[in-house]
Image (cartoon, rainbow, N blue to C red; front, side, top):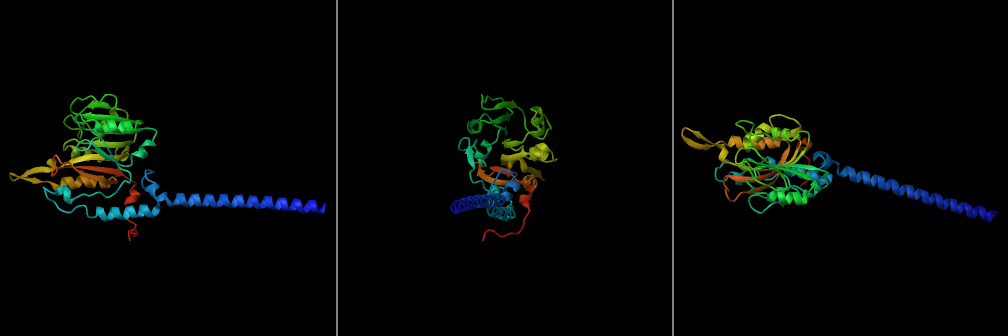
Length: 296
């Protein structure tokens, strides 16, 4: 009887030890998982759930953003304006070019993240019949609805829905982004990619777009735009001059609406007057400078 009690006691003790070890391991795992989640929380919040990086890396991103943004207006020179101004202020680790090399292809931030979406929406304004961007985007992102717009009539077969329309600020028979999205009942959807090459009409287009805060203007994730100097020319006393304030104002609009530059590319067909820029929208909290030094 005594032997049985000792054995029984030993079994109970062993069982309780096992239970305690099991509970301890799970508690440690829970604490560790929460710690890891918390360590990524800053990037998740300040990118509106687009990025997932450690807080230390994200703070380093923020500091580098402020350093470059503060030096992005350097010199007004008609022949070297894009060379001297507005370098990228952000980087996407897995950015990818969709479409052909040269004029027509565009750089997208972290395409693989868009693959995780159940559905997405892409507007391509100004194609001139070149659909390599739409073709490769549809191949990689079959879940995306792609709408392409141009003044002329083209056929993009089954890769996108084509619309003949003139893009602008809603004046002189042009249509704004709000008008387009209203026409297709998209005003309450997020626009994952806005690609635009409208040969200088981008100034009026974005002035109108960002003239008010609404679901359309505040729910664009990426903007891929070719910016032209030709539309900032004006005559003063019969002399042609550049209105640099107009192009600086355009970049200020992007910044005020929480977009950062993640790619910049020269158009070698017109290198002094046209450059491609890619922007991605972040949460306004990203732009608050907390003065923490992380780059040293």
